[in-house]
Image (cartoon, rainbow, N blue to C red; front, side):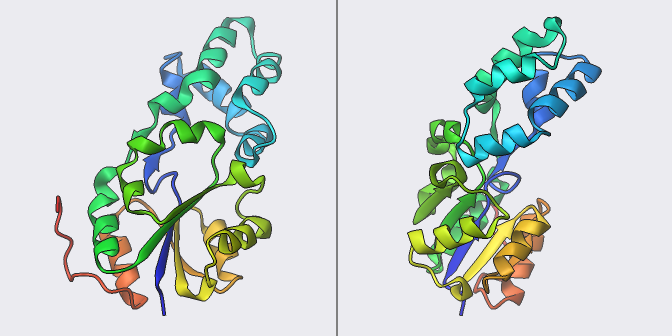
Length: 210
């Protein structure tokens, strides 16, 4: 029986959009592509999520791979990108309803230390019983270690959890522990149907703006 709903954060509760972050510091499409490839599409960003390095420590290595004209943009991006995170409140009514119907809610997210600076702005988290950020525990999805630590941290039985993540590999990793899940593509109504099909009690129709 499902008693706990576990949410990812990026592309579920917040809009993690590298091109949008970069666009605050350069408007050139080729520069945006180049910076994205050197900042967000490397193993170094995963280490930020793992908590082994910080954005400040990444400035030098990234700048060494880019033309000097982009060094200022990269520096400002790495210091301030978190300030441009947009909250995805379209899922908030569903989060609220799950809580009202007696489900405990948890967050399991790959995120670096800077994320703590914006968590008060994420309205949905007010309804959560616990949050688990990868950098605080030095492990990342979809590695098995993060799931073990998550279940242990909150004393959860994975068979009583339902996982919502925007990456299929993260959902599949959870299934290996017995945690059923759904790969979220941004539509709360489709998610609602998936939840109901898995025996999770909700009203038949979402009431927007409850």
